Image (tube, rainbow, N blue to C red; front, top):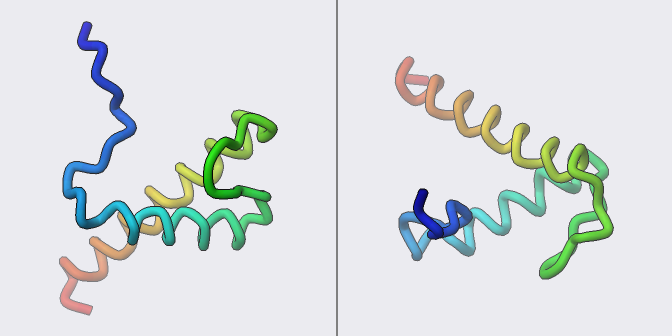
Length: 68
């Protein structure tokens, strides 16, 4: 198994936009996410942010594919 972290952005230029998106989603969900270390948060809190990000990205892609 590779030791490379999967927590990387494939397009480095998108990192700032993804970080902003993550903070917006955390705010919507009421998760007190901060820049930097967030070890004080539960895995459920962190997982809800990531899961909701994926949901919103899929919805946006579906709308784009449907021509809306």
